Length: 336
Image (tube, rainbow, N blue to C red; front, top):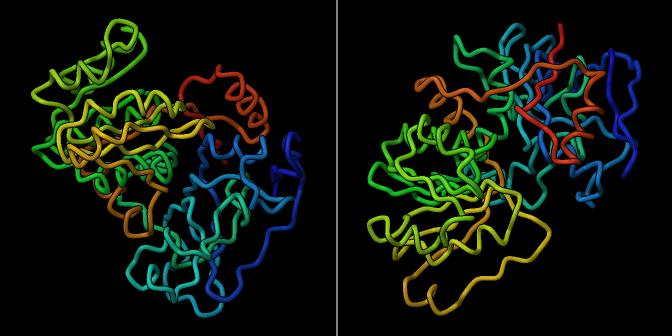
């Protein structure tokens, strides 16, 4: 099988032929249909993951079909369409695992970082960490839902977004656009925060009722003028400081949740947080039940990301463009 392997930090992916692996106890062999390219993959190559196990096959936005099952696997059966995510395995016995919050397991293992992922024609995955794809959901379009969609959807839930919420989204690119559409589908009122007015038309087309350009207005002040502030602010931009600048735009008891962040530390004003019981959190993707809910909600509301299909041999070029800030739509590696 054709495989792209990350051999070390600051090294391009190496394309190589490998034998198709066999699934072991509790594992399934998945013939991969598609694998999205995520910024986490770029972080791996840039040395942002000290836990990384090189050489490793990147990729955690995976969709495919079960081709074989290992010993002890009664589900999924051969022929079932599944997705796989950032979280690839956990200890299964800690308090977090038994509560269904495997993403918080201290011994969790990450697909494409310490376990081989989806930049290959086949992958061996843990059977209880793959997710069934809803009937009729396009597996190529759905691949980014396994990370970008899951992160956006679960972040809104973890921050307490409801149908009565005012939700502000910073940056309406890949993850941000999904967050806007999810929040609108939940019934929330939505504002989008961008650096300029360039994205306003697209934001309003997705259902945003407010658009705040930071080059024209202070985002926190503009949010406070929005009926008293946002109940949830979701940062989908790669800037930690952009998120921090909006904190005082939260309504009392509001939550700032970071899906995106940069290398700089998160610095927040203590007094407004104390006086208004404000919250700040970072949501790390989700557990298997969150992935199922994300896919079900996406299918029910017709929410799919915009993406560009590419071949595995194009992955290095896409990652280079991402590193230079020149990427467009989310790229999805497809396998014929």
